Image (tube, rainbow, N blue to C red; front, side, top):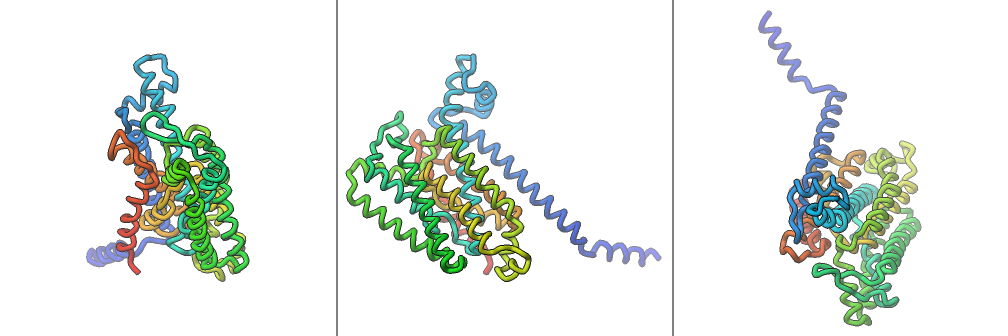
Length: 371
């Protein structure tokens, strides 16, 4: 009797868990991952706010945040001015831009079923760079002036932002138009993006050929990608774009899961394939174009962040999209913190650092994946 009871207990232990329990366990694991990423983001936020030519410890950063931008204490006034006027807008812009680019990359990779799809590979960043180059060279918005000893800013930034946004959205509109004429297949959209990106890069070089030395320097400075140019007005635009545009892909995550199994199956489940692909690609392109217009070209965030999350939790779009936005914010904030620490007090452009770190990381991820 005892042996039979032991055998029955062993058989019960060896039985696989029910689908409901397995799904609940999966949800708990993903919730823990999200909480861990939020904790890492909070820790990195304190480090980023304290890093720079004027170093501040975590306690000093917390005291400056609590005291507000104009504390009564004279000793805290300098730290509060550094935090609230310089670093907090920069750090907030890094979080919003990283989240926008990470979300845009995850949407594009899911809708186009292409792991190499990103705002940069689809020509959106090149279109924005062409618009900014035209503003600087053709409309004389390229005069530079120094801010302290660490940065250079454009004298007419809003005209550059306007034409850069026009160029990025125009490139996205052309890609969607060409894709629509071809039935909006993933192959058509990717090939159209590659062709238009090459065309925009060539047009940018032609415009730069006729630029003066100052205009060429201003164009090069803009294409670096720099979070130091972000103030509270730019932060407000980035936040509004992320809230207004980023909500659409998150609400359509179930439909994106159906699209991952193929267009025919998605149609059988009642999903309008062409409409979902059109609206999702337009939303991702708008997020990337707005971010690039305000901050310059920041590559590899939209490519790396979805791959990192997909390696951890799989391809369920309900979790992949928000977690990719969170991973993009983490990666960009970490890269920006490194730009202020590597050769301090000189700050490197964040676009160069993301490319420098993103390329080896992408190669490592590709080598780790099984066919």
